[in-house]
Amino acid sequence: MTARVRPLLDGRRIVISGVGPGMGRKLALQCAAEGARLVLAARSAEFLATVAGEIVDGGGEAIAVPTDVADPAACHVLIAKAAGRLGGIDGLVNSAFRFEAQSFEEADLDRWRGAMEVACFGSLEIAQAALPHLRASGGCIVNVSTVGTRLGTPGSGGYNIAKAALNMATRQLAQELGPSGIRVNGALMGWMAGEPLRQGFAARATARGMAAEQLERELAAAIPLRRIPTDDECAGAVLFLLTDLARAVTGVLLDVNGGQFMAN
View (cartoon, rainbow, N blue to C red):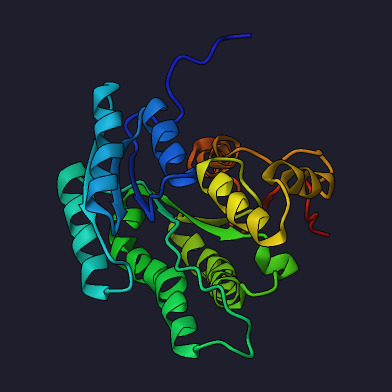
């Protein structure tokens, strides 16, 4: 067996929107380790600069473009800057979201509309702006979604509905863009072990009057692998969809949740 010599994303030009402190950061680091040239986007300029700095310090290439994906003009500026800096675009990851913790009965539906503007329409704006570059490169799009669109979770309707719309957008774009050689896939994340989840567990455990460790054990017991996947592992699924290993894959909504939900 011949060992792999070239990195999986050797020289690929990748835009990642919605880079956060959990999976988004891990994905950026993994892509850089596999040779990608990166443009990173999110609202927090300070955090983006930190992640880009990590990559550059490690010998990689990354620039930060602070972006509010709910602003269509900002989405087009992001793609223009990315294509100008990188000389084109080979891959796009849409991971931005706005979480709204409200029951339907008590919900301010304007806030749910805001969640839709970020997760669904923001992703579509970026993808549409990137389309000429992706067509030229035969590139791909990966939309990051949630297992909540499969199972539903109380109080998460605004977030889940917006991501469910993104799921359908993934399949629609896969159909329409396939003839141009552009692959479009989704990765539906479940619970992810990492700093954001640890912070969330602490708040949930306090509300229920229990230890965070007990809450984590309860959750893991409902997952067939009996553990919560790490944000590194979940990022790896997105990385796979960006590479040529998935060159025959399009229109897929890949469940990445340790078996918490198993598609028929």
